[in-house]
Length: 192
Image (cartoon, rainbow, N blue to C red; front, side, top):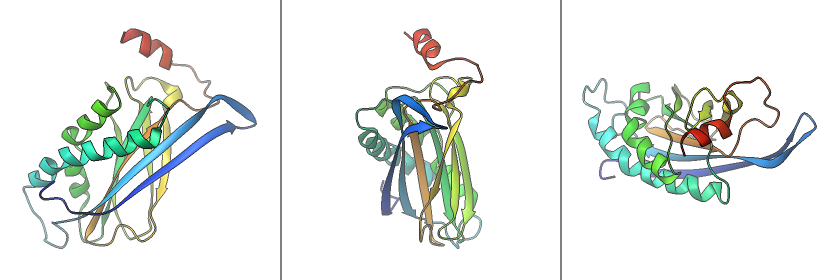
């Protein structure tokens, strides 16, 4: 990650045991891993070539994949999502350059695959802003039970010259999902 300087990392874990009074047969674990980077393009004005960010994001994805897998623990990833918060000195495209397929592929490898596109959200914010990271099933976006999200608020982050890159995993669908569509089991059987 020669051109990316890490300032901080965060790991957030949520275990959900029930919803609307209904116990989950197995708790659903959501994890978010966050890496806060110095934004080399903050306050630089428009820079046409952002490829150094994209190139550096391969190693970033590998590291964040390891963090996410460790946070998931004994659970298996069934869904995912990604996002970025850009400090006021930067632009939304700086997060987009860090969140391309080359960033995500090492994470897919770490969790044992992922055929579906990864839902994403990026925005330019002041420190302490909130972002909702959308998530979907890792192998098929039509598994409605896995349309989910994770709300992240990072106090004091990102500063104007920072970018916070976020990757979320979830171990299952919504506890009370009952609106139809493909199931996780159907998608898993199809890929065997």
